[in-house]
Each structure stands twice: as structure tokens, then as C-alpha cells.
Length: 189
Length: 189
Length: 189
Image (cartoon, rainbow over all chains, first blue to last red; front, side, top):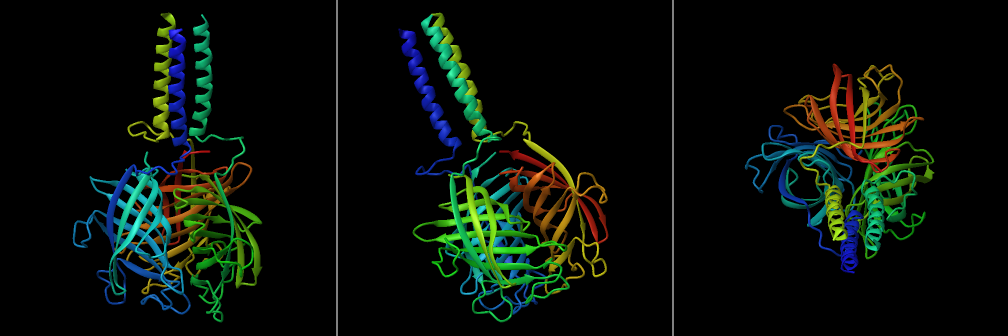
């Protein structure tokens, strides 16, 4: 009798445990607060080549529409400009802080009537603190904050997935901008 | 005696259940019909700038090979042309239907001897119905139907993964095409 | 008595089993050797258009910085050059072996002071052996070996994720290079 009741309890507990773990498996966390398994905030600094700053520039226009050129961003909200970059990463918002990594890839402006961009890039780390890459892609509507996708990672960030909340932290004319990247990983291996 | 038999039964059931759930975990569904956890069909409409349609164009050539220019698609199956776009999305195949989102990103033609393309873009939704982005990437052999990958999502499509079956639904010369995008997500959070 | 002890043993075993499977679920394999669920090594061969090899070229410069052009790779470590490619894939390191697929997409050079690249491409297979695509993206620091991300797949590689270890297997001036791609999938459906 006692044994049978014990079995019942045990089985019930196990089933409850299993149904919980099964929910995790299916990744249905709708309604639950989502906690990233890893979070990193960094800044990167983009200095666009404009014909006069070859020394300092970290990015360059490499594609332009028929009505544009590769020294000055095109009219119509830069629609059609594609920019390749290799920008220093810092932990805080100061360009002159320690450069802890590089943000490498491209962005393009894709809309005539107002600013929107599309980004594909990797954050590349090669220090004692972090070694590896995180790769990002997505549409950037250039709102105050906006989310793009973390689509992969290597090294310390092996198989990473998640989202990154971008915020333009500073803009100086058409030469400099600083982007705050709040990286939240939801798959960590 | 009865108790022992009961235990045996219970353990067997649990192990069967576990081996099933373990299979799901490892995502080995080989041979089983795969059901998307979310499915969305939409169309997007690409009107390529050709020097005369600045008003209506939603895309522009921004990269071209040495033998091409940025007003007319290059010879050799447009090999080397890169196009940036911000195209309206509709639920049906009518350009003049309600624009429910934007497809933003780029495509490039990557083969000399026949048409093939490579795409990187996001479907951007910002309505009461859907809010968020789905990001796509992949080779497009321009067959009747072809699959590309869903590599990430944000907002309502947080952490999305899956595939999208593309079909060119209409083509008008080198100015307009309409793409049907049957988006099937297999990871939904 | 015996029954109770049996229950204890069974429950303990199950919990151990469950905690193991739960760890897999959460993908915390830190410290464990990671075994890919699928592995494929292939080579692809890039012959860059240089104004004189239109017949054989499999890739072309389509974007260049203001100081460059689209026939010759730019100075400053080709910073700002974007190249579109459709390169044959072979199982071994011989360009003249059977072409078993195509590597299609783009790479760009993104740094002034030394060579670094960023890649987005798909390996496209359409034979009896393999049918489907694997899509790759990531920063390529052009070290001896370096890892990029596998961000998606279709067909036989449905929903693939993983990493690929790249090695430049041969370089001939600025016209030809051969890349060894050791593709390790850690998510297989």
C-alpha cells in the first residue's frame, strides 16, 4: 500500500518535471520573462572616409546608386549607399578607451523617403577576456532603439543566438557615429 | 508482487516517453513530417531604378562589375550586379493592396552562365497585426521554387528559425518583379 | 521493503538520466568535447576577374572604395573591395576534380592596415549525393585557420547550424585562391 502510494507520488513528480522540461525543449516561453544566458554591452565607432580623413577613417563607401559617388553619401537619405567598416569596439562610449575588439562588416542605406539601414557584421574579440566572434544581421529602422538578430558565434560565443538592441549613441555630421550594442544571447553552449 | 509489476510498467512507460522526448531534443525528426510552428505567406514587389522611374523605384543597382554600370543591369546574366531594396510587402499578389510591411536588404547576381542570385534581407512589420522582423539569407538558384534560410527574428518573431520557399510570381522586363515568400518557422519562442 | 529499495534505485537512475538530458536541452556542454552531428570538408576555387580572364573568372569586383576600381583590387589591403562569386566546389584540392557544388555569395575586405575579410555565402549542392544549401556568414581574419558561422540550411541540410573552419589552401597572385571549408554542424534535424 505504502509502496503503491510512493510510486504514485514519484510518477507524478517525474511527469510534472518532464512536462516542464518538455516545454523548455519546445522553447515556448511565451508570457514568461526571458532571461538571456549571456549579456554584453559594447560600443563601436565608425569614422567614414570623406576624401580628407584617410588617416583616421575606419569605413568607406563602396557601393552607390547611379546618382551617387563613393566619397560623399548620396542624396535621398543615402539610399543605395553601401559602406564597409572595420570599427574599434570599446566597453564604454569613449573612442579613446581601450580597443577591446573590432566590428567588421557592412551596412547599407535602403530607403529613399527616410533613413533605414541593413547591417551584416561580426564583433571580433581576440583578448584574454574574450576570444571569438558574434555575428549580427538585420534591418535597422534607425529608431531610438531597435533590435537586430544574433545569427551565430564562434570561440567563446560558439553557436550563439539572440538579439542585440542598437542605440545610436552619438552622431557627428556624416563622418562619425557611435553605436551602443546591447547583445543578449538566448542560446549559449 | 503487484507493486513490482507496477514499477516495471511505470519505468517502461517513462523510458519510452523519455526516448521520444530525447529524440525531439536532438532534433532528429528524419522521416517524420515536419510541421512549422508558424507559417506566413507574403509577397514583395521590387521596382528597379532604371534612370527614368526615380519616383516609383524601390530598389537601385549599387554594385556592378567592371563591364557594367549602375543604371542598367549588366550582361552575362547580370553577374556582379548588387541591388539594394526597400520593397513593399502585401498579403496578396497585388502591388496596390495594403502595404503591411517592408522587405529591406540586398540581392546580388552571382553567375555568368545563367541566372542565380544571393539574398540577404529582413521582412519588417510594424502594425497592430505583427511587430518585428524576420531575417532571411541564402542562395537563390531562381528555379520555379527554391528555399532560403530564416536566420533570425525579433519582436513577434523573436529567435525565429526556419526556411522560406520563394516563387517568382511575376516579372515585367528588368523593372518589376514580385516574389512570393512562404515563410515556415520551425523554431518559435 | 525490496519494492521500496527498487523504487529508490529506479528514481535515482531516472533523475540522473534526466539531469543529463536536461543539460543537453539547455545546451550547456561547457567542458565536454563537442561532437558535430554532421561533418563535411570541401574546397572552393575562386578565380577573380582581372580584365583579361573573362572566360575563366568565377568572381568579380563589384564594389570598390573611392580610391579603387573594379578591375584591380585596391591598395591598403583591398580595404573596401567587395567581390561577388560563384565558385566551383570540389571534394579534394584539385580545381579539375569533379565539381560537386557551387559556393555562391560575396566577400569583402574590411581593413586598411592588414588583410581581413567578411563573408556571406551558400554552398549549393544539387547531386544525388547531396541536395540543398548550407549558408555561412562571419568575419574572416585570414589567419592560418579561422572559424565562421553556419547560419542555416535547406534540403539535406534543413535547419543546419554550426561552424566552419576555413583554411586558405592555395593562393596565386591576385587571381586565384582555394579555400578549404571544414563544415561542422552541431544542429541537425
